[in-house]
Amino acid sequence: MPGYLRDAALGFLVQWRNSGGKGPPVTHRAPINPPTAAGATIPTPILVACALTLVLYLGAYMRLPLVPLYARELGASTVDVGMINAGFMLAAAALALPLGLISDRLGRKRLILAGMGISCLTSLFLLAARTPLHVGLIYLFSGVGLACFSPAMMSHVGDSSPPNFLGRAYGWYTSALYLGMALGPGIGGAVATEGFGAAFAVSAAIIGAGAIVAGFRVGNPALPARRPSGGGHLRADFREIVRNRAVLGCWVATFFSTYAWGSLFAFFPLYARDLGISIPQTGFIFTAQAGVNALCRIPIGHLQDRTGNRRSFILWGNALFGLCIALTGTARGPLPLYLLFAGVGATMAATFTAVGAVLSESVPTRVRGLAMGGYNTCIYGGFMVSAATLGFVIQRMGYTAGFAVAGLSCTAATAGVAGLLSRKGRA
Image 1 (tube, rainbow, N blue to C red):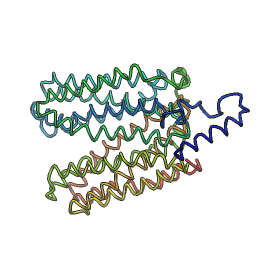
Image 2: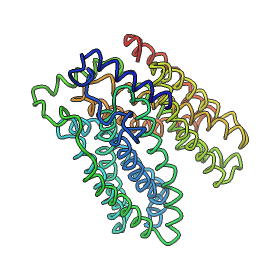
Image 3: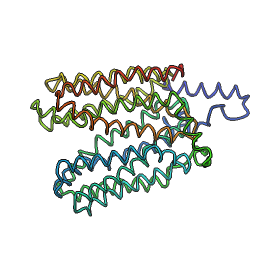
């Protein structure tokens, strides 16, 4: 029997003995499909969540490299293309927190289905777009769908996982997410050889099929999340969240991580072009990051569960992540860039797997969607601020300075994160 299954089984028996053998183990919430169930290594709801997340992000990221080209074909300028992407990020950032709160009131399933439905409709609506304005409005709609899905699904993973499985649960979940992000652009580009319409239609079919499965397989295991707490408690819920130092620490770490990562996302292709690195080679460098990121998340989540010390993973992961990005502007060839991007992937896996687990275990179920909504707001807000500020730095001082500012900001912010997490004693 694997070690982590043996540990989970022993923990179950000890808690059962302490309860006098008269009832279920005493925990903050009853385990749901514990990983010790026969024939399963992870709870079934987590498997379903991973499959649906993979499907959604695969279908959505099929559109990612195509929408700018499609908009350009319809007459969009470079500025128009930038505004289309900014609108998408703005909608996702602005709505993630309130829609996470709504998932606390209405249940996770409704928001998950709404997010998948909106994403499916986005692909179908793109088939009918005739001007860049149409594309911009449709992509704004797409941001709403992502804001519905992400906080609700992250909360659902936390609701469905036994406490001693949170690290692995978020490791599996985020691995599925990044696998979809890695596979989507390649599949979208391949299908687009038959035309943009074919790619958008396939994207809609994939996401639509996932939405149908979600309708039958996603449950609402955490009943408190479905019970409205009443308008009188809304401000109390917000106060509870913003006074939670662990939540604030995770939000700060997330914002500065995505601020730093946004510098590579937006400006590294231009830097690579100036170095004479080909477009396919640039794509492979990003693929190396995504691959290492996805491969590391499950074993890192397992290690976090075994050690019980997620705080160290957040702090060291965030600091080293920023350092890798800061050094990107000093690299002058493919090999050092591959190594740096592999480091970015591994440290991102360490940080974000721990952040998801700490957020989940630091708040009660009834406000978990609010905490996850703030997390997703920090993700898209970090990307927005990065794109808006670092372009000026790079234009005036060069790529080396731009990547250094982004990475060192992330590393320096780790001190603040350490202070916020310190009163938890142990995350």
